[in-house]
Image (tube, rainbow, N blue to C red):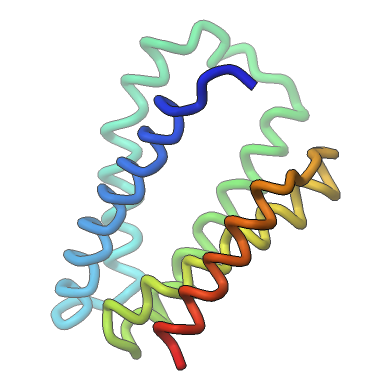
Length: 140
């Protein structure tokens, strides 16, 4: 694989931005219902991203049926996951809620093997073992 440092840093930065988002979402949960919070986040996200999609995506208006189906499934699961996460998120301390994101790589690994036919590496297993150990230290 080519140099992965920059893409990795982009993903880490996204996690930082999402941490800020979750912080303010947690604060908003004291005032607003969860469904209104998520609807507002989705609406603002749509308003921000649509002009960028139109500007940068030449093929945006020429989507295949398969692409539309994949996007619908991705959207439904994203919304469902966010709502369920927010329901649990409001019941536990913010710092512990963030620990639940540590199971995400295991789901991604399982699904990517099944549906994308990707291969797991020794590096992944070592990182996963360290992640599980860290999770257990913090939770137990």
